[in-house]
View 1: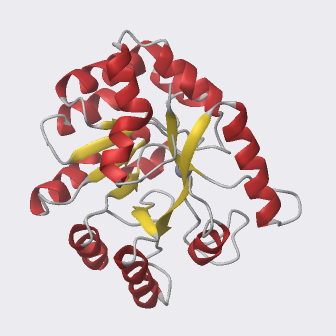
View 2: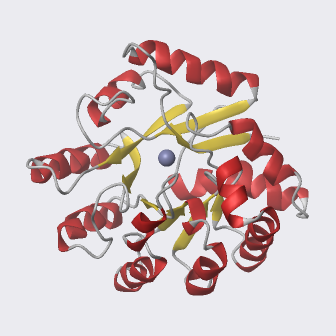
Length: 266
Ligand SMILES: [Zn+2]
């Protein structure tokens, strides 16, 4: 089975060393036969998981590691940061842009995000939106409620939107609100994590993935939130679902190849 992990972060090391962090990540991918991945940098400078420019530089010579752009619209220089993302999107350096409502106290309907959505539409790359609780912090989910994401999806019908973490633990609410919207996609990241399973319920998670795949077969991409979450647990979660091998292949790699337009050496 070919696997592409669309939601990776560099591991945090005791001493900041991005090269070393990258080699640890690569070893993990190799061990689990993950053939390609998309690394998501932090949206602030000097982060222990690297910022956009650092991760772009780090992966510039790789054929199987891709990068997502990120932005913090609350930072003073966010206009310049968005300009940089536009350049990266234009020359194909970034395969998507991710925003973090809930990590950041911002809503997806914030007007400052309009230029970001426009870049995604213009250069035909998806916007990935962090959703759901943060570990131990249910209250942050008010920022990333799918009702706002639906608003954006309807305004920008050419914008492909990926809901990361399926708004856990309220996965059924997220399904009900978004399953009829063709330009809303989902990644599996976090859904194989112990805390997410405890708070959401494993059966609910499985049901919602299966229902979503049956309704929109193209819409689910594989992601793990490594190094916060375990890659193997996510592979096992998909493998144990009552889906056909074709449906699993769509989740594991085919959907990601078309959504993110990535070329991988198989
Ligand atoms: Zn993540």
